[in-house]
Image (cartoon, rainbow, N blue to C red; front, side, top):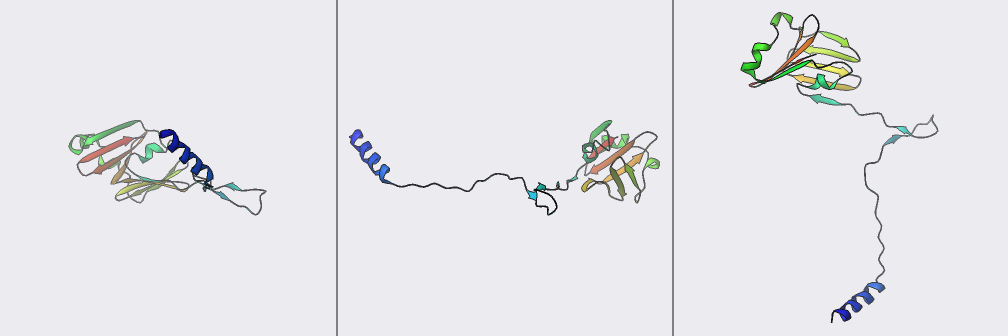
Length: 145
């Protein structure tokens, strides 16, 4: 019985004309056609944006993290630099390929087309380093560069 059933299925399958076609899928590398070059050139890289207390640590060509303290605001606040060392809002300066902008409620760093933001950030400058303090609710984050 099984042999007979298999033979019938095999015979019918042999007479079915099946064509399979598919469009390739994946992640192609986009290119920009250039009228002045002999071929396509790579697409310009996309702008990187981020908003977090750690963003300056990601910019290793501008900043080197020396120390980090994070935790309940009541504990971390005692370690914050004195207010007299705070960099005033409106201040802008260059550090390597980065431009730092101090705003009343954040610190923004621009590197080329990249834009990073430390929300609720305050910047402090002491003799040999920068300190960024970020407060989010009951949590404090302090990073020294």
